[in-house]
Amino acid sequence: MMLARERGQATILLLGVAFGVIAGVMLLAAFGQALGAKGRHQRAADLAAVSAASAMRDAYPRLFEPPYLRPGVPNPRHLERSEYLALARTAAVRAGARNGVRVEAGDVRFDDDALAPMRVNVRVRGDAAFHVSPGEREARSVAVDARATAELTPPSDAGAAFPATASGSGYSGPLAYRQGKPMRPDVALAFDRLANAARADGVALTINSAFRSDAEQARLFAAHPDPKWVARPGTSLHRLGTELDLGPPAAYGWLAANAPRFGFVKRYSWEPWHWGYARNPASASVGFGRRGGDGKATKATASFVPPKYAPMIARAAQRWSVGANLLAAQIYAESGFNPFARSPAGALGIAQFVPGTARAYGLRNPFDPDQAIDAQAHLMHDMLRQFASVPLALAAYNAGPGAVQRCGCVPPYPETRAYVAKILGLLGGAGDLSAAGAGGGLEVRLVE
Image 1: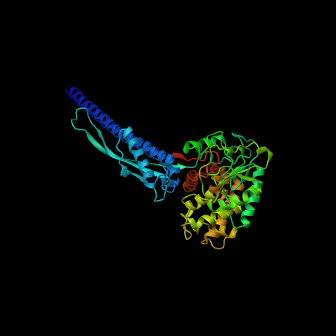
Image 2 (image 1 turned 180 degrees about the horizontal axis):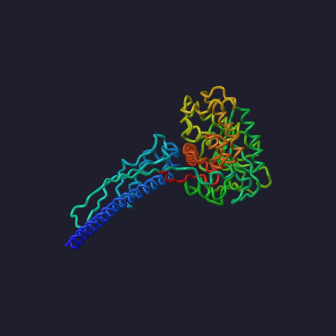
Image 3 (image 1 turned 90 degrees about the vertical axis):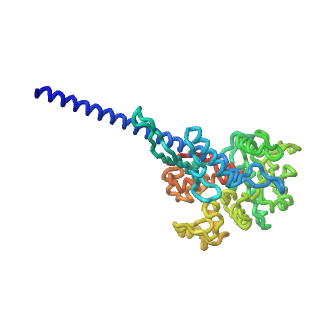
């Protein structure tokens, strides 16, 4: 009797254990369903953030296109900030729908109130349904809250140096640089003489474009397919290394009266900024006829520069041979053209100099925009000479040259990478394609 009773108790105990194991397995399966649902929502959030940032990258240069091609004629490529953000939100919502989740437009947010935010945050909220047991009639639910952030960053090859020799065009010789723009060495010397004469007459010349490879011309033509203003790839005179697009518009009259004395010829009657060097026999075969022009209309500085600062930027660009659009984009990123700006780190003025660097560059008053912009151009001239790369020079301006030297790259500091990316984006929008070097676009990176 005792043995039978013990056997019965053991059977009951085994059954209890079995039921417990089954219940545990069912709970684990339910847990797995819930975790799987959260994982799907997180993947969808990641993809939505990346899609939004990709839309921002593609649209970024259009923010800085001028609103009008000429008085009364809207520029179809110009994009307002609200339209830029709407494109990103739409891309996120569509990506969520493609991946089976609902992304609300209000849950797609941007980090700051700048003209062109570089970072987008996406939140996906909802309920994930699951059954604890197959026999359950009503599904249980667990709240899901997934978040993802993506940003625009400098290109991975942002350390590419300015080439010393031209390639991929009608000219394959050495290149000289003036204001960050490549050209034949004899053209550079002729420009020096031209610029010195202009300066003596109170005119500060800026170079908006010079030598362009056929690949660069193809990108320009794809963005502006109007052969009157942008030559087709393989036909642009800029491929010869002899052509300069000069500014500002206030200098057009001076150029018309004086540039021929220095060997420059106005190629097209409708392009007062386009001058080609014609004295060297190697350029004697350059055709002039009534053919399509090249290069879109440009100004000394981009359209987002307040008019009162444009002459200061032009003077500094000429004095230190740094691109005017590069300086303008940098000031926009540094202070938004606020001459009284102060940063939490102690940087001061329109170009955000810390006291030690200001002293090193002879900047007595960082709140004087004329002095500060000249010191900024001097510093950028030194950084460009040291690193031979616009992205690396910008990184050195922001994080210090030591940080750039140690890695030979844009250092992996979020602030520095965002700073370089913002300026490269501004340069792209200003039409300064050569200033960012090879690979001057922006890349999309999932942050978290």
